[in-house]
Length: 533
Image (cartoon, rainbow, N blue to C red):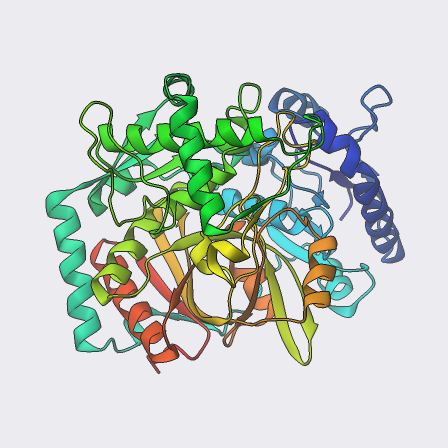
């Protein structure tokens, strides 16, 4: 490469997060600079550290456009991420950049750089922008250095994916095939509404399904406003909200509360979250929604506590009852209201399909998405930390509600607080999946895994290495290595649902794959132990 390598660092929209996370980013950049120079190439930063703001991230789309105006259009470009990042801050520049692009993340659970990079990769894939991607713990290992050298010499890095098999290459059991196809035909005939409380959370371009791809599946968006959600909260009484809190207390859910609004979870914050839960269920019923998503982090953060408590409860069949105004009708009685965190529409489609397949099979239909946060080997198995940023259904946790706690969201993300729905996911067999957009086509990767129970001290160590306020799942993927998942996965999120046994999980995977296919989605089966070999 004749031109110097240009390194850029994309960050959060929130100044507090960029400032707190900057030291980890700076440390990673030093390692990347050293690796590039060791290989004999010149590297420089594409934008300076901002003394006034006390960080060196691209902090907005406006800032990103200013940065790209100064980057040579053919320069080799490294996007280095040790933190969560908002992809739209730089997607505009990557669209028109003519030089090779390499996304890089540090293998660390501290700040979700891996999560940020996977989101950017999914966004680049949807946009049709060619890129290479790498990850490393210390940036001195053979995997990283050899691939970095290839990229510096002008090669595009394409990771091998022997774990991936197109669904068409595998036989589906007749019963599963017929169930999935029938439910897909019913969905296309009867239609379903996906309620979206403001689209495009945290710059997640990859999480928006274009209408022309969604409509053929039978799902149609109802674009709702968070202002309506807030207005409905204001119309909900303290008495109704307190009844939700009392119900949760009676179930044994623990709220870790204090009196300092700035740093602790307070009863007043919880009451506001209970109002949001009631409001969300009522609006979902009013508009006939089969699934809903709330914008979350950049949504109502300046007006209300976080929506986590709402999200975890909605995804649980056993949840506080909500009645319609006026007639006392119990809404969605005996059923979950599948919620897709962070308005990830790909997860919303997946959650709706999961709910229908699992319900038809008679399994507990609770489902959630998690961040692919990080992982390490434990006793010879690679155990992933799946850790969504605030809430999962209590049915997924060891002990159910009694094993569930609610802790205040970190102030750097949520100034007005709000409690999470936290627990340790119970051991068992799961199906994992991800719907994504690639080359103008809806695709889905699906596979099998088990959730394992680790010793309490190891769970706590992993929590402290990530975000201890959030729910955790210890997952072991069948037949998919760490690097295979990283090289193929096209999103920061992964969808999970439990089945009673391994055989039941295989049956659910087959039926879900069949339903996806009948909906017009291109399906890949990933890994092993799925019963389709």
